[in-house]
Image 1: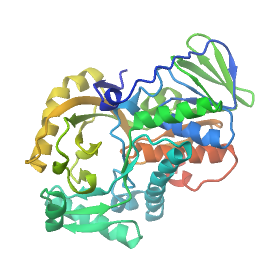
Image 2: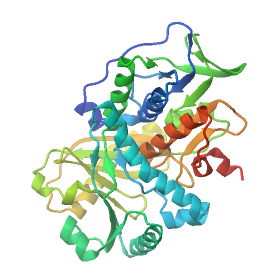
Image 3: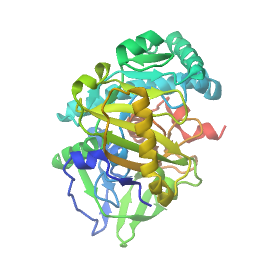
Image 4: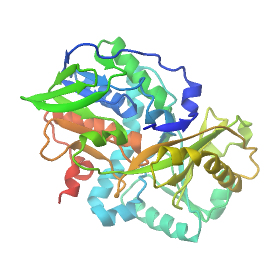
Length: 404
C-alpha cells in the first residue's frame, strides 16, 4: 500500500537520499530495527549511543515512508485533551503522558545538538484555539487542569488572539514549549551520522517476510531468502507493523496537507506559532522558512489509498477555504499538496514495548498526532528495557493498559 501520494514538500526541499544497500547475505547483530523513518532513526540513535550493536532494515529507500508526509509539529499536547484523558486513563497516567511529551521535545532537540546538525528544528509557540462556543468550554476545562498541575500554559482572551495573531477565536491556550522540524531530513541526518561513525548498518530495499523465535533470540527471513539473526527485534514501521502484531490495535486514517507559495514575511503571525483548533477533525497550521505556510487536516476515517487519493483535490480546496476564512488578508496560494495514511488509537496514546507474552520483540508505534515525541519516548523506553532498566512510562504507553 502507498503510504502517501501527491508531492510532499520535504521531498522537493531536500536532496533525495540515494542510498541503496539490499541485504545480500546472512547477517548477525544484537538488535534489528524494522523501519528507517523518524521512529526507526531515533531508536537507532538511542541504541548507538548506548553502544548496542544494531541494524536497520527497510523495504524502501531510507525514510521515504510516512516520514516524508509528516507535517512534523512537536507539541506536548496530545490529540486527546488532558482533562478528557484524565477521566479515561486516570489523572496520574494522563499527566505522565503529557509530561513525557513535554520532555521529549527537548530530548529531540538534544539529539541534533549532539550530532552537530540541525534538520530544521525550531522552537516556536503553540496556540490551541477555540473554534466555536463549544470550543470555549474545552479551552477553559483544559486550562484549569494544566494550570493545576503546573504545565506550561497561558489563557488568551478573544481580544488577545485577535491582537497577537490576527484571527478571530473566542479564546485560546498558548505555550512556548513547542517546536517544528523537517522529519525526513531529521531521519536521514541520524542515519548518515551513525553510518559514518561505523555504529549502524542500514539495509534498504529489503523486505522482511518472516520473524521466527530461534533459541534465545530471533531470525528474520527476507523475501530473497536471506537471514538476520538477532537477540531483539524492534518494529518501527508505523501502521505497516500490523503483520507483526497478534491483533490490530490502531485505526487507519487518511489525512491531507498542503503548502503555500512563499509569502511576504509581513503576513506571518506572531512568532510563527503552531496553530490548531478544538473542532474535530481539526486543522493545524505551521510555517516553513518563515514565509511558507503548511495547512493540514481534513482527516477521514478510511484507508483505501484509491479513495484517499481521489479526494486530494477536494480536500485541498477545503483546507484553502478554511485557512482563508481564518486569515482573509494573507495571499495564500497552494504550491504543493499531498495526502497520506496514519494510525490513531482509541485513547490517543502510542503503543510502545513488548506485546505481553512475546519477549524480545519491541514495538515503537508512535500512533496519533504526536508521533515524533512518542517516537522519542519509544527509543528511550526500549533502550532502557534492553539494558534492564525500569521505565514508568510503560504504565501509560505499554500494551498492558489494554489487558487490565
